[in-house]
Image (spheres, rainbow, N blue to C red):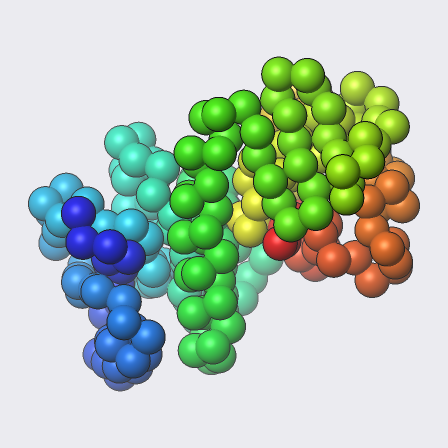
Length: 228
């Protein structure tokens, strides 16, 4: 596989050209598609490292393409779209997108998100060895311990599960519903005040300044992102 091969799925020629210029400058290999049908065929034949997907494609909704790809791959998917409606963004994340940026957008911000998602995938090997490191936080899956600056954190079972979930999905935008379902179960999927309480508690334990968090970032109206 070509290292850092990115697939652009975008029908707006000016946006596609802008992305191609940026990717060339920063030495990313790329392939481009303008519709769902061609995008899926190119994905299957080229096996890219990351996808940048527009939701408004000429032959259908980009969310349907994301859903198809998620059935066969865990490749990082960043949604790049003119739709800034929270429900649309949440729907895209719920079907499998990892991140989103709305148009008009900063190329530098998009490149930063791309690097972060590629870094997350690179850490899969660490996870398979039962240890996962995010900056100054270290997760030991076997012992069920989490360390901050080599010091073991005192966490309740739920706090551990929540922080583990964040760390294993670092640099990915997670919706409230996704977090609640995965950590607490489907019965809790609408308990957002419950989630906020635990996030606030975790921030006090791992952040130097819980009001200006370094790790657990709020994605307003969407959910949270664990950054490192």
